[in-house]
Image (cartoon, rainbow over all chains, first blue to last red; front, top):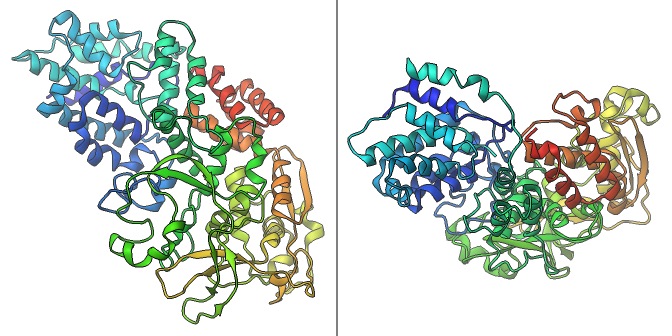
Length: 179
Length: 448
């Protein structure tokens, strides 16, 4: 949807403005995206985020899953050793690649996209703000982020398509993944 | 080109650190404690938005939602979903403090995972954090055997066995199985409920012993004496008895020094071990000071576990393993460590020494005759507190500091506030107090 160079610099735009470098683990990232994109996103989140325990961190409990077809289930994809992985991972490159792939899929899929925008205003003055607030609900830099997004002058045939592009850009940013 | 210029114009601004707002502080601790994001109708979040409380106060209130009641369960767990999320996250975190996860010979005795709580050590820390008016020392004192209180549908399988084995192997032990499902609290295992009358001591040439043992027995020492912790860390395989020489449960000491004190061996210098060197020993390491800088700590603590033996209910497979504490034969007496192989060593009265030099330079060398005494000795080491501090600081700030950084003041991440929090923790001895002090600190609020 976007040229790589544009995506790279736009990700920088939303990059860390505080000193913390604590990325959320797979449970946090998955729960956050699930709240934004709804239950229809769970298959993508399970296969792309929850399974990548080495990239995102976030241990599991062997005693928790009782209804998976496989004994280790989604939570402990690699077995017993997954109960000892770090709570958080500082791995960045692969994380960025995986999140990028997930964002593209979630925005492309009609059901998840419609869920995300179900309460978004169609007025131009509002939808930028509403979309940003999905990922940054309490940021004090929303206005600034809106202005920067508007400067990109994103074009699309329909409003839905435009929102898809904006939503993907915000989803690709890094700051919402940090705690 | 315009995108590049646009992005470059923001770079100087990007590197600036900023103080987190009250809502951001709450969002941060909520994410860390629950691995989730707060709902819009979150009562604490609303109070922060309405400026009734600040972010740190919100975080402390959030932590209080995971208080355990007198039964050891999360208060009002049927409605308190936030409390349950915190319990889950915190216990997962505490479980990473303890590196071992494989019971020895787990392939041969898979049911071990279903009868002996693999997360027992973590549950001691979790219970300590989420209970009121409890000292941190209690994690290594007393003979409570802890299990997760979990609820859920009937499992389709058990950890150690596949679905197809469920009906065949587990019926006899149905009432003793570890709970599976969502963790709602921490419970004490009932003594004398899981008593067995026989065990075997070899996989291929098993000898059957008609002796009683309770898999929920603990000799004391809190998590240190848990069947689960010893079984995960003894490093000695089925049936092996200790001989005071080469065969000792050294891995246990090595692991507890890592798990609870964040240290790797050796922790002693050549000068510290001179009196322990045995020049005429027939064990090579006992003759050399450099070897004994590790072996003094390893062997003298392991001497307390001299009568432990890994056994199995049935060596025919589809069974479980347990630790067995051999009875003391009053006619047999051995010193703490013999450094000479003797096949009767394991029958002598268990006693040893805890010899450990802290990074603050203080050498502790004390006799231990019980697991509670081992626990008390450990609580006398500075690292007992600083290890927990380092683990929580790393968890809450995302910065990696080591215990060596702390004592040698190597890392530029360290601030005076780290040491103030540590001193308070050592004085108050409250794990809950430690976490509250971190959440209330500038280190946390400023994201520094």
